[in-house]
Image (cartoon, rainbow, N blue to C red; front, side, top):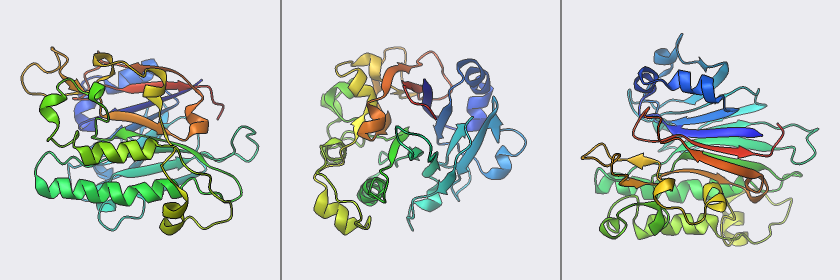
Length: 292
């Protein structure tokens, strides 16, 4: 099995004091996608370039103590893509992609693992507007990643999406209909991303215009929901630090594995490690029947 974990750290240095490295050593995922590391390269030097023998690859925010994503892996990538080409959001450290392209791999020679941290709009209208710009900008780029260039690419995006898609994805859905993370426009973005895609023609350039003309939906798979379509409280991955949200399980499902259908179909089991309190998020691990 290929064991893949996603975890918002809410600060890698803070998470390290709460047993992060010991947990990785014990659980030994093949890759762990981390978000909100809240550190720069100098902060990681000599401490966090590797964890439990897993080498880290990162996209740091320009602003100190803010955002940042990474992927720790025990497999050597064939390529590393830092940022997705955004003039606005690449400065915030929100996207890193590792490619594991293996020409001799018969089931799919091209595979990408992505760690992504979607903006939160909870701090006010300006950041909510930025979140909508991020969603609109990222969508065609993710679709273009799958465009035919002779050989289709499988990929899985792991991360803190900051969207609860369905009513079963948060405890108090009635009281949060007008709150960031459960707004109709955000949920519609996720619905479209998961909607079936029309066939695309190989040989066409992966431009936004081509994507818009050929794709009805993103055609992606919410991997956890494919395995557990109806779970509610067991599915939550984030709890507010206010009140007794964690103790009472007043949570949200904000952390996802979003995969192409070919890769998503190989998922065999999922676990949300609620006992691990590295941050206000719980690690989400999914086992895939996949040979790197």
